[in-house]
Image 1 (cartoon, rainbow, N blue to C red):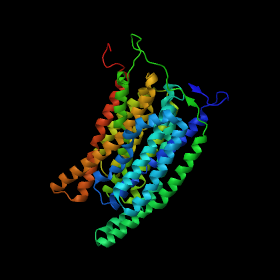
Image 2: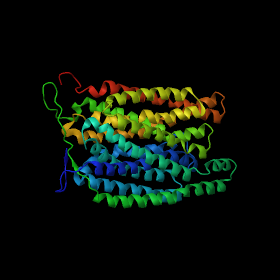
Image 3: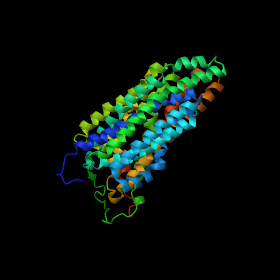
Image 4: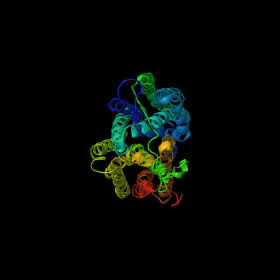
Length: 443
């Protein structure tokens, strides 16, 4: 239900939808450059696979730390000022990359990424529930799919631009490092690290300007109260813990974000491990994101007129299981294409889980939204777990007599099994989980 903040008559939701799409574009651009940052950081800081995936952890762990504080901040200052503050915080995080590059110190880079994540948490906490309840819940997935298109197009652009900047010459650098003296090695890595200076300075300036401009954006007030769900006895629930479908939805979103981040952020490093050059691999994240954009477009057309949100979620989960099995059953570029195809499986999961999970929460909608935002931390935990599995499998294969190059490629491929249980749980939520409205029959 829309209540205008001004004295003007009730207006179309088109303008706020465009503004929120712009917000999704921004954090899509910033988020999906992690695919290029991971191999870049691994090289300049001489990291293991598990250590390099802390790039994803630093970004996504902020959603655990900041989701509830962000909800409190938004209640105090409102959506518009909250989004403005989020953009400015992201700009500060981008500036941290400059001293991090000068010192070539990994934890300083991670600090900058974490600060950007804090800003994105504010944006996500405001934008996702806002766009979900801006219109009827049954078409919520359609509106979020539109947001997803903006997000993933931005991610593809960010991946291409930063892939070209950060991964340019990475193969030559790696080759030279093998025979370089300590002084030559430091010079090579320092020069490579300095390549982040200009792009992150520009990013910071753009974010600061947008942070100022968003304060004047015409965003109407939305009523998050919604319709209170009643059980068979028509009693009103008085605790957030009385909504099983919410907590199962949070867990489904947690494993989904982990799977989505693996599909987007590991594919470049995976390609390099299979023997593709950095110049070739820099395009791979774009394959994943374009697959998502194409599926989002289908979602906009099909939901809710032709298929229900729950049906879209079931289909996505089944495709995720199939593609995960295909990744570990194939090799080379075919396997990479199946990683990219996860974009098809992933696209409609986020748009479908939000409205299914928020349905019936009533006065608990804001708290439920904050919990869903915290579930984004799946991107902080599951990708590094994938990295640890890769490292462990690689060591086992080397111990069995396989050379390091082949061991790395095989370990990277086989470790994608971690995706299968994620999609199995999403399928459970799509079929049964979102229908469970009471922990016990007579609660």
